[in-house]
Length: 427
Image (cartoon, rainbow, N blue to C red; front, top):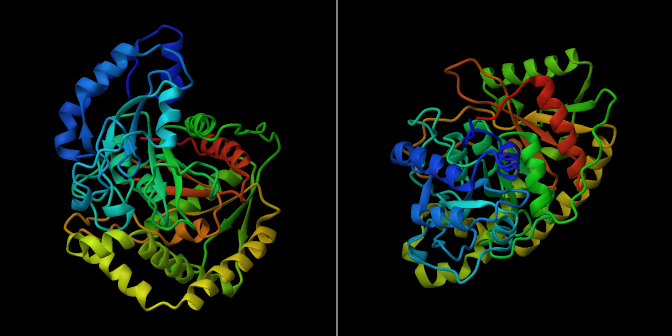
């Protein structure tokens, strides 16, 4: 049966081979959305008639032929409002698509609509709920895209990450996710927050889907052959391992043992004490750049900004130019050290989130910490979330894989082998 729970690679092949039609895929997905969306609230803008029109006019060709896609509501789109979950931009209609949205259309994707985000992709959360447990959060700013994926509303989805906004929802919702190396994907038509960290990423049902999306969104992207030898992986706990819940630690340690049983070498990597400051330096830069990015909104519409955005402005105002510059210099120096430490490994492993999805719906600002994600994101390195196999009824837990800067193709190939050896399945 052809349906939204298939991965994007299988769906596009089915369309190209004439096994199904784009119209049939659209109808199947829209029927599911009609039933489940009222409880999940993944979409901020959904136009079924427009989806059906796309399907009717579709050529049936392209790398993403007929693949349903969700688009986070910080990407400009010509056929849906782009509102950044802010009353300041209520009804805001861009005149053209963001660069990556155009690339998706050119590849034959079926744009389903715009997904809920947090205010300006920062802290103030939207109404979206986690399909695994509607009392729990689906994560931070890419939450609508992640929840829609977990509910089978689309086969791939766009998100972004500045701190933990892509991988955290992937971990909470049981999804494969890929955040490429900083600067590889165009941010044209994407609302900025912290330009030193902002990166476009995406969700998929398999690692091969992550690679398929990379071929579409990173022109000229090269994926090397899969290494046939046993992998050498580094397991890095970072300075905040004591923040990891026992059930998460147990799941990660079990995954490491599975990989060793499959013949791979997994070595513990201990970082020098200087790396404990990465978390604070990321926050300093995020605050200062965020305040500059939202300066016009702050000056013209301060009363319409959330307390979390205003608190960011307060912290930025208390930070000197010299302090921000020193934070950037420290990260630049540590990047060289980190590269040497990780040179012997095919990829690094570690926690994605130290907790499972919390019951945080009563809070509009807390979806749990992003420390283990933003640690690596501070250096611009590519990151993958692999959902670990869990017993029925247990909440998802993610294994984070990290590659060295601009070694994205190798990371995806390595992740494909790791996922196969762990026998994981995205939800």
